[in-house]
Image 1 (tube, rainbow, N blue to C red):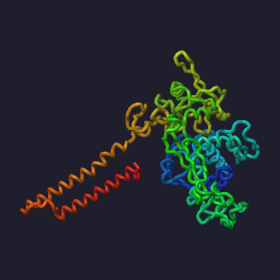
Image 2: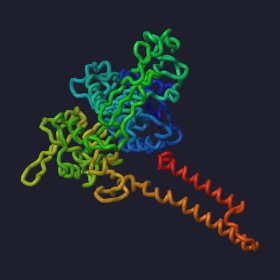
Image 3: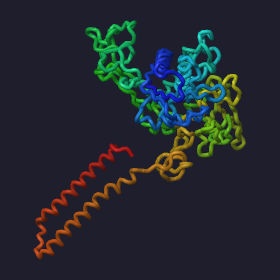
Image 4: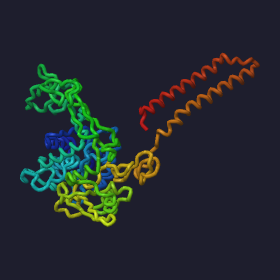
Length: 527
């Protein structure tokens, strides 16, 4: 996991404190390793608006992260700030958002003089990104005197250092559903904070292996100098077996779903190739959904994850009736001030998900059913929503996660549209917002219209040809005028040298434009 950290109004010695944060976070979950590949300290001025409102701060930080992704690629970004958040909140993060372009990150208040305190908060918020909700009664077996568990709804001193079995099961469900695709790719070791060193468990330049500290007992790797033992070809990775590389073509990672792709060993590297999946927007589930970050996001799947196997999406009328309210139980998320937004008709299927289920309560920890009855003709239909309470904080407090009962970003909200990260319906190219039921340029109320570059291709193809013909005609006319001026007979079979130069120059110009256009058509140039 590649994590990028931004700090603002930070009140401790930076180098030592950050090293302590990273060291404390590393051993928290043995199945996932956190590699810090970037650190940015905002010492002169904040790059975003940081305030006591955690919702507006999180929204601004995630928007900033997305803008920096191409120059500062990362799997997850965390903001640590010395600004205290309102109420008892010390951190905020979206649920099930790891690897997301729009939502993989969190904000954390530097609330303690101890490095362990801030590290525990950051681990807690990253746990939400991994799909972990707050612990329900009976999940945490760690003693309170030892700090309890990281995903407890409220923590104190001593600070927690462990996850529990409930957290691992939630993580497993998230990964098996196709989430967290970036976790299977190796981090960029050259960019890691703190520099390269033998014994950190990462294979870096100049190393043949690295099994961790000197207590490592690998049969393939010399832990003291990170070299392979005699006769060994490799030491780690799923494409390494008994210190030998597996043959090319051996399956090393199975698809997690219909939007994922298999990967195979190449016979040269000990690690499985980078995790690949179908491009976002690919149709899946028989045309009922789209692929998004490797997951096929159907409403059926989301209802089942909330209610169990018999969960299924309710009627459109349920979505409209409940989500137009703009309150705790029916909304399209919160605005930058932390106030609930009511859904317009076109966005209703991007708000609080409404399901049909025979279960007595949702599966989600600390979740309760919010039931609404709507009338369809002479029948009454029960619409079932989900609300997560934070213990001891009152009905209105959602806790430190964005609402898990909201429809997930990337879910299909119409025949030619999907939900964006603002819980608005985004139309496919060729359909007009807001309802996506008429021909248009695509986009949403957030993005503006989409330019259909394919419609420009005929113009781009014909324009160089027209220019070439016009220039050739001008050149011939100039030659003809020159001959008349000299009272010489016009020889059409052998053009004069000057005309040849002009014609060849613009012929080359035309070919050059064709080559550029060819690259444009092949997708070489971003549009």
